[in-house]
Length: 554
Image 1 (cartoon, rainbow, N blue to C red):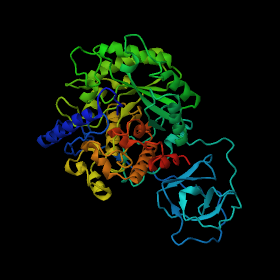
Image 2 (image 1 turned 120 degrees about the horizontal axis):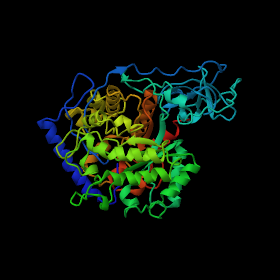
Image 3 (image 1 turned 60 degrees about the vertical axis):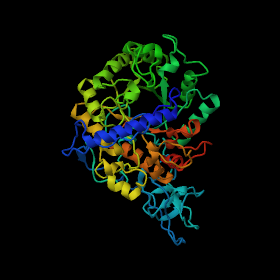
């Protein structure tokens, strides 16, 4: 999603509303064929606008069994104790990790879903960790109704000599660790074996961190660290950084990119810079200046991205080349095709590899969308076009925007209608009215994976550079009607589904760093639709999703 200063929010909402209507009409008339990995082709759905794009395509991937739950450690049983139990009994209050000892330095021994009964039998000296009857340990704040007279355990494991870091970037083994998918049906995407990629799964988040000032920038970085995340994505609008050809504004008080890179580096936070939005001097004379727009000469973009790579080599981890290029609003191109993107990508990729061979190149993430003439191209069609044109030779990872709408992450597009009837569809019924993969986080990811494997690009990780679930609470009441599906999602569901999605991606083994959309748009753009996905309110107070994510590595 873009944080646009150039297009008023309501104007964008009107454009998106019109697009949604066109998509509905197209779905009723019939849509362009979509390559679907499975035998059954679902009906093309009505793409409902989310971030900067329009959602909708289709795919069902062949599957393997979901990884089984990691075995619970039993090597160091704690002697049972006679304790007082509360009437309701102890149980987990959210999805919770189990550990082999009392601390996050111990390896994980499994995990439990929210509201799972547990049997604490002892505690550590300060009561911050509880020993369970099966020998595993759990952080005490994750358990409700804890017995009041638990004894100190007779045997408390010694902390490991070398701390086992739960962050998969620091500990590549964890990216392949078997983790069960909460509530998922017994299928997992094609090619479920972990990749040997050096760009493994990790926890990331997107924030608006440009042009915010020193204090707010450091507040954002504090939050990333407080969450226990190791990656941060921010959008780099080329039009803001090269207003005049060859004159780069990386140090100005307006952009502050040098300062961000330095501050993130001191905290060991890896940066993904997502480049989009051509400056006017580099665009076709008569193109639509109300949209982001491709450059008339791809060499101009390559020059800018090459300078980013040269200046920040060894300091910025990855660059995403463009954003949602299968959508007119992001390219200004009415006749969108994957080859058009490759014409822009290839010179940029060559420039990055020339100036900084170690910097990761991520393809611009597509928006899940149906094919609507002059508006959008089905993302499965567009991805296949890119792959057929040689995409895999020019990138280190494939970007994705698997949005969730009001559908839980474990539900495939086939299961989405039943899922929202159970969780809530008062405001939005798209998955029932127009079944399609784009309503489903899981089906979008599975479909991309199947296409990569089909085209011999299964070695490339998929990097969700934007995903998440909106919630309408704690927000302004003037959000455009196109985003009312957010009203179907409670803040607790937003928290639960986000945690589930992160765990699913870690378990799959073929997902790179995953970036939640977003950290702080309730602060910087509180009256826009972008705020619906924020995880802190406009006073920087954590919402339930923030608190849930904070416990992911506990």
